[in-house]
Length: 171
Image 1 (cartoon, rainbow, N blue to C red):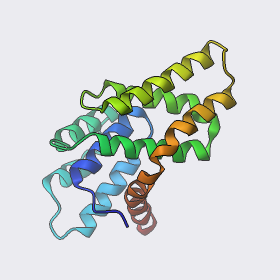
Image 2 (image 1 turned 90 degrees about the horizontal axis):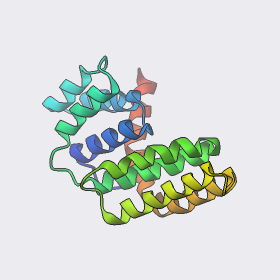
Image 3 (image 1 turned 180 degrees about the horizontal axis):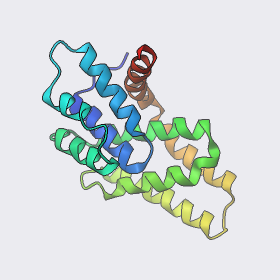
């Protein structure tokens, strides 16, 4: 079992997931509902997020940005890369959408140089695909090869997603 993730880390993971299109709003709100039910005293952030279900993606992302204050962005970014790997395994036809979403992470100011470089390389692969220089199977291999190094963060992702699945099953 991975160590407990701070709320700030989870909020950052959710914000990056919403901005990149790799996570749905429903995942965020399922996790929030689960946390409210599990905790003896839910935080103000959890209560405010639970009331934000009718807000747009960008408004929810803004709220998450406020609550993530002080979090290191690199662990949540690696977790999101692990989630992208899971999504790629489920449906390789989504490779272009996944790379496009991941490329949005390079706009994050505090993202490590290593992650920026890897994502920039993915962007290059995508451009080669658009130019007709590589076929889709090669693009899938390019993305899968990069994401493989983030598999160890899948346990963190599953800790979050398993909690949301349990909340949805109980509802």
